[in-house]
View 1 (cartoon, protein in one colour):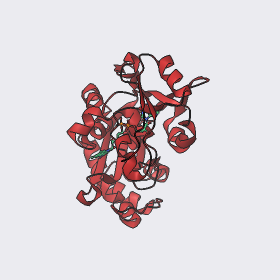
View 2 (tube, rainbow, N blue to C red):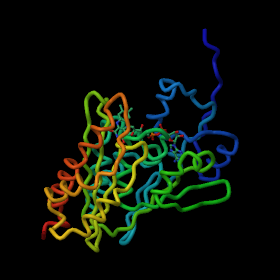
View 3 (cartoon, rainbow, N blue to C red):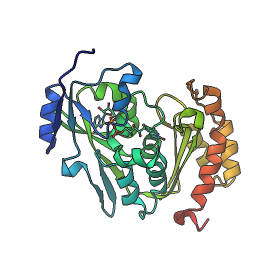
Length: 285
Ligand SMILES: Cc1cc2nc3c(=O)[nH]c(=O)nc-3n(C[C@H](O)[C@H](O)[C@H](O)COP(=O)(O)OP(=O)(O)OC[C@H]3O[C@@H](n4cnc5c(N)ncnc54)[C@H](O)[C@@H]3O)c2cc1C
């Protein structure tokens, strides 16, 4: 019989309590939907965990006239519901409402989706990249704000002691879209994701998830779309530019090979621009 392990569970009521538990070596437990599969990945479950869902400030979405603050313990379901009527954030809503399945979305959190190391197919990562989100971290030395691109790149080192507390968004988008390609053989995880946003200056922000190990902005395509002579917000033209400026190195995985993930990107870009043109913010085009 396997030896039993005594595990410690703390439900923190304040950020200070959560930090104190972290100092004692506890790992953050959010919805547990990623962590519960650690043993399948050959990773031992942590001996001590600290949950954040009882910290009121981390479980709400605050919508202000010029910005939005999302607590790390907010679930996908709550996020989708909170932002459904907010113009410009259609992409983030589609990401929150399209990821996984209803049962997972009810418990999986924003913080968990961004902090699951080694999880390349997180839907919220590209959606928040397109929003140019800022991630608020709580470290043993105090709080810290970091652009989401830098957060995603430096995550493994940052999360050894920091925890994500909030996500900050500017309300500077007029429209956005989130297009994913799930495959049954990939366990319905998306094998490629394109998130597209248009800001008030009509600049496009484009992010790609699941194609490379870490989601990133597609700056080559953003620049081409800004420079092109033809109207760039045309689905066909955008797909042509995506083909020409495809600088992704697709990751090989058991669900899909790298070349395939890379090859589907122009199609996803075409669908994303078509979806953008259907939003209220771009109806005048
Ligand atoms: C069947 C299934 C289908 C899925 N399909 C999709 C999909 O289509 N799209 C998609 O995006 N995801 C999908 N997922 C993944 C799911 O979204 C993630 O498991 C989930 O987002 C993780 O969130 P959680 O709250 O459950 O995190 P947990 O499992 O609790 O934690 C995940 C990791 O993040 C760390 N962590 C959590 N919160 C914080 C924090 N605030 N600060 C620091 N570290 C933290 C934890 O310590 C842990 O290492 C799927 C999962 C399953 C089981």
